[in-house]
Image 1 (cartoon, rainbow, N blue to C red):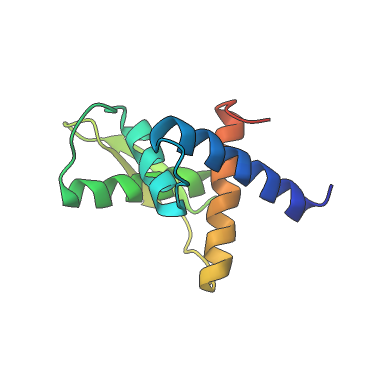
Image 2: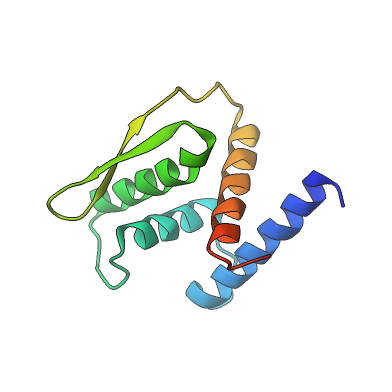
Amino acid sequence: MSRDNLLKTRWEQVVKILSNRFADGETMDLDSIIYLIGVQELGKPNHTFKKDEKVNLMHIAICRLLEPYGYYEFDYFDKEGWPHYKIKSQLPSLKAGEQAVLMKEAIVQYFLEKALIE
């Protein structure tokens, strides 16, 4: 199976599993999955978040997802338990489609590490 086909298959597995678990089967989009990863990384799944906190959760997720690629590095937890990352290297200029592929690849890797998919 080609690398692109493998990514597509694994991405579809992630979307199906998360959509069934968190969206009553309605297909979740990329942003929703990034948000869920942020909630997971914060470790407060039953907390109700304000709008600005939701944006911060997505930022946490993006930092965590791109950490293995060398773009971010975990720095510390603040007094409220929120993780903070520092930039190690700037992201390259990517077109919107390329950004989506990078994020899907990073999400698939994340869930491979968490053993949600194989």
